[in-house]
Image 1 (tube, rainbow, N blue to C red):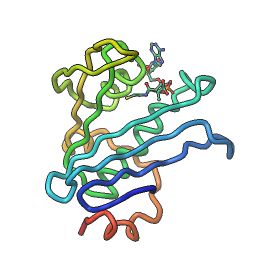
Image 2 (cartoon, rainbow, N blue to C red; image 1 turned 30 degrees about the vertical axis):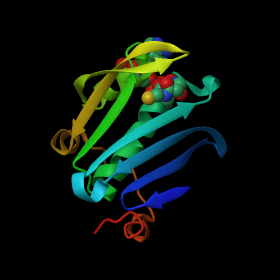
Image 3 (cartoon, helix red, strand yellow; image 1 turned 135 degrees about the horizontal axis):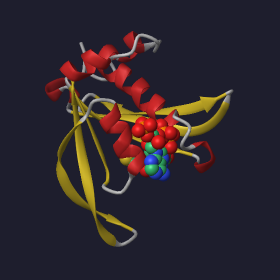
Image 4 (cartoon, rainbow, N blue to C red; image 1 turned 135 degrees about the vertical axis):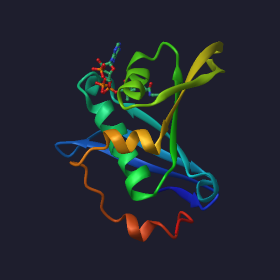
Length: 144
Ligand SMILES: CC(C)(COP(=O)(O)OP(=O)(O)OC[C@H]1O[C@@H](n2cnc3c(N)ncnc32)[C@H](O)[C@@H]1OP(=O)(O)O)[C@@H](O)C(=O)NCCC(=O)NCCS
């Protein structure tokens, strides 16, 4: 965790495969105590893509958000042609939640927005993801 306050926090997780760092998965909360909403961002080294890791990382961070922190809703955004990110969102139960525009390499690009509610997550939640050390973090994040 690099920076945190109850109103705005961003948790940075390293993704390790056999002890080697291959990517990162972030979880972001803006006014989490009020809205219960989170968003996420991920990146994998090119050589570690397309092996299912991206989906595992997202499932893990969603488990932290919903089971660990009590989130109500998770959002995700990706450029419309980001097949990997958009497929992960759809596959984990997110529903399309509109579009927006952002700049990519100096050009406008269409962003696809996604939304996963707690109800839907409860129906697809995994039972093989273990959380540790969450309790100690709650006060720092303004939860509880
Ligand atoms: C987004 C990212 C983390 C996804 O991780 P990944 O390990 O490559 O994804 P997965 O292997 O879990 O694949 C997820 C799904 O996307 C599909 N997919 C992955 N890469 C794809 C590609 N280049 N083209 C088409 N489909 C692709 C997979 O087949 C899989 O589909 P399925 O769930 O229907 O079987 C990774 O691609 C990445 O780091 N990209 C660059 C940074 C980025 O775009 N971050 C997200 C910004 S929001």
